[in-house]
View 1 (cartoon, helix red, strand yellow):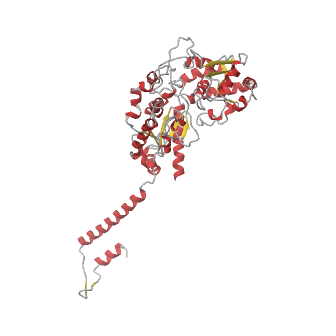
View 2 (tube, rainbow, N blue to C red; view 1 turned 120 degrees about the vertical axis):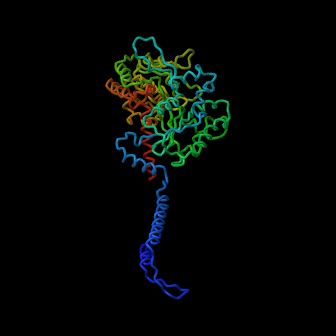
View 3 (cartoon, rainbow, N blue to C red; view 1 turned 120 degrees about the horizontal axis):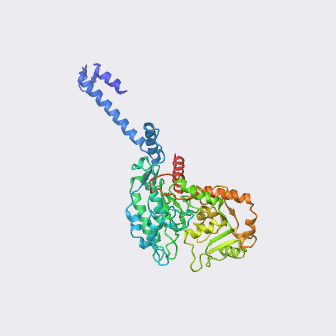
Length: 482
């Protein structure tokens, strides 16, 4: 019987039987008593529904709560340009980032020509390059940038990201400002595996205690590494094995890691190496791009690098042999030679600016910073392994690699089935012009602009594309969980 029917029966003086006294009587309810009874029953019904609603509405994953919040925010402010783009930054203990910069001397190896402390300045860009050349090309936008400062550069840009939020519930992604590469650098040589693994283990334990982690178990978290992904996937605990086991920790596998070189692992995404060019406006980018279109390039191809004597059948060894026998078609900058200037950004850029093609073979790993230096110089890259670019920088480079590069099989080169100069000479002038234009158009996409002035003028640079890629990727991840 429904509640309202029971109340009606009780209050309209219908007879109720008493089984002990075997008599009936009519009960007249006062209006006051009926009101109290009715109110109590309604309150119980309300509380019952509220209890079960709160259980049903509790989000099983973080994207459900975000969907509700975003819906509410959308109703109140349809003009919010940050909807779907909000990012929350974890406030990590400084031992995971700032302490590494404060104590930068521990990052410097005995064989390093320059202290790592030099590269920390200017928010990770390094010392500003001062040139006496009258061309004006080397203006205030050029720095002595070390590739291992990418984590610092990215963190500084994140601090200036216009869609930051202090409320993690409205955030579409959560940034973890852990300087993974710099932290590992301290312990790569001469330390046991426990030392190399300790910080990564401590970071994961710190993250696991945070409510932001428990909503999606870290799947909406991302970090940046200035080292290749393989450096964080040591497979054993032998001291002789390279790297740390950070990315093999079960919880770490949920994190997305932006890295200068990815691998076959699902949550590692390749982003460009930092170059030495950090413009603060689109105009400064154009100032650099235009001369690259008309630059005189006397050399057919060039190579800057060192042979890998410890590697059997080294591709580089063959490249150097081809270059030396090319009858002045190739310009070689041998980084094994005494007094070489391979670390000088101006020398490298002058080499690449004077070349039509720039050879980019694998070295210690598949990828090279030199690839992005050559693109910056308007020099068409020549690759010898698909993993050097084509399977790496999917957010940055065209899918049709023949539009901006030349591919030569390393196997054919070692078997002497192909000669580099013969292959490159067959590329027509029109094809060269088309590829060079495509390369020059890529320049804004592979540089990390300077936003320290607070002016957002360089649109869709390497940082912007990384953030867009992360947000799009996490949006797909949430959609697949629905």
